Image 1 (tube, rainbow, N blue to C red):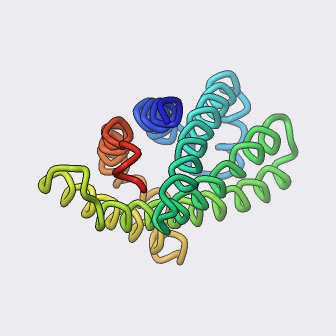
Image 2: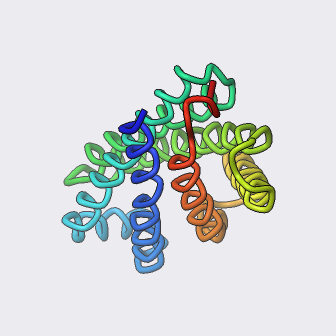
Length: 197
């Protein structure tokens, strides 16, 4: 239990750093796909390291979530664990599909990774919404904030997945997702056996 709490909470805490770095890099990267591909390869030390660290942190969150799913038998944990597992597929695609690959291949891999990333996040944040909606651990104000943030995040990923808004437009919600991950980190520290069974 302690290791699951540490993995969930520390992964949720430190993922904020990678989100922030990615947002900064995205702001500096060219908008044209071919120029962006060249930019990623020119800055591979940063991108490759960032994605490897993010892969590790997301795996830590997934392990904690899977443990809490097994202990709680709650559908919310099952849904968010499924989302987290889907998200993990994104990282081998990015790490293997961008570095020194022809542009056409990188473009195809990017499309696959984006679809998996958007859908995985939609499932993950939907699970978080259900978790926080039925939560009895957090104080009411924090619970309502978590419900609102997870609902907003799920909605943003849904409309981005449905191609109603662009990925660039969706990134405006980054600070809200950061705040939600901080709440997730705190939540993980508060979980007790009796609270998830």
